[in-house]
Amino acid sequence: MAGNTNLAYRRLCRKFGAELTTTEMVSSQALHFNDEKSLGYLEKGHEELPVAAQIFGAKPEILASAAQKVAAKGFHILDLNVGCPVPKITGCGGGSALLREPELAADCIQAMVEAVDIPVTIKIRAGWDDADKCAPSFSARMAEVGAMAVTVHGRTREQKYQGHADLDLIRRVAEAVDIPVIGNGDVTDIASAQAMADTGVDGIAIGRGALGQPWIFRDLHAYFRGEELPPSPTLEQRAQLLLELGIGVAELYGEHRGMRIMRRLASDFFRGLPGAPKMRQASNRLESLADLEQLASGIRRPGGTDPGLPSPDASLPSPGRAPSSAG
Ligand SMILES: Cc1cc2nc3c(=O)[nH]c(=O)nc-3n(C[C@H](O)[C@H](O)[C@H](O)COP(=O)(O)O)c2cc1C
Image (cartoon, rainbow, N blue to C red; front, side, top):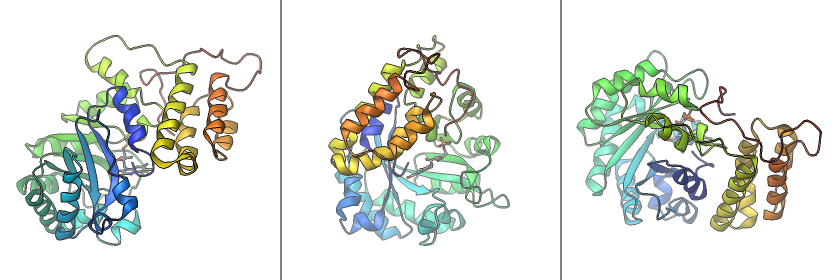
């Protein structure tokens, strides 16, 4: 997820059992021209086995050139973004705009497949709008030209992030193709993960549901293996995770830029805590790791010293028990 799933965040997710991690989408055009900032998104960790890099664009030759840069960096999988609804991306024909151009999308996939030895996959949406939920036929066409797996976000481009992911549509994609299908959209807890698994998909992709609760992967592993759910993280553990993330982000981008990135990422860690609005305000002013340490103290002692608040080691809801969704 753009702006969120940098290497430091992905490391937290791996630690809790995420089995495949993906960079945020990177512009194929920028990679083609060796743009430093974009190349910086192609950082991967030694523990990311396997890790995918996701690129966007709509020009087969440029995508092929970017694909080679991704492969040269040692990524195991190359993913094409055909889901992004943002006008800046669709206006240039990329992201979800390709859903309306299946033959151009097929040319893009084919060019990427021919350019590299690693598997090429695709991430799509249900379709452009309600009148054109093309995901099953679109996925079948992409498989024909060499896509090795498809991730389906069950919303249309028109929905952006409103409404719900269409699980029935995801089921139809799983029925329509022989390649692995990864279901995506609104998985934030055990009930929603089970509903996604019931569609017959081969895997589940979690986006927003992992923000502020990277342990969701650990809990879902336990659930699907039929094991007892691990205890929920304590407030102390949650504070430590926030600090670990902040230190990792500062190592990647330097303290100044890193803390600006943490302004957004930190707020997810306060979800459900007493005093969360105040902590969110404070996170918007993050300048240094010392400020982050102070924020983490707020997690350890949510709501300050007010009587009647949870003690510092009080447990938080786990994905198995938390009924509400992220954000
Ligand atoms: C802030 C934000 C950034 C995102 N960036 C990307 C991206 O770079 N590539 C991508 O495939 N999807 C991206 N997405 C979409 C998510 O991967 C996912 O498909 C969508 O949020 C639905 O799944 P979820 O309910 O698990 O979050 C982004 C979503 C959000 C909210």
